[in-house]
Image (cartoon, rainbow, N blue to C red; front, side, top):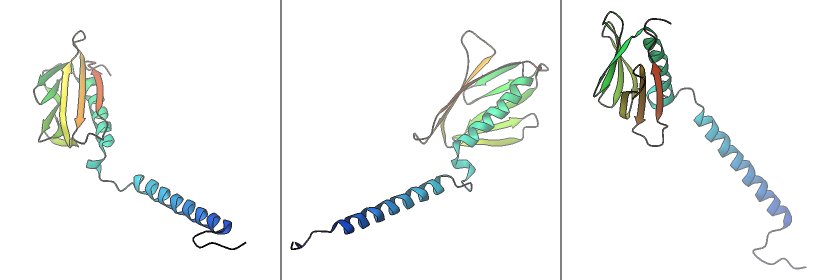
Length: 150
């Protein structure tokens, strides 16, 4: 049988399929490697900031006995009317100020940070954090005051 021009033999088709699978596997491995790099900048990893909020708020609400909510943040106050911590949204970044008024950047690139009291449970603080990047997950949680009783 004559070979027509433009036709590939069965062996050539198998070879091309094998090469395509190898290249696709290599690209998938490269993408996985790039997504798992530990050297990512902290300010780009929104989940790191969310974990900081959880850790600090959990600690602060164990000591606090009441909340003072402002338009740009919240203050957690202890039984002696001293602030345990103040959380404020300044220039699209959430900061935490401790009793010594030392500020710490928690998360940047936030569109909105909302702190509200629950309608029925006055010791329950509802926290909503919305990142500027719509592809990032928003953060919703709540914290109850324990009034110095860990």
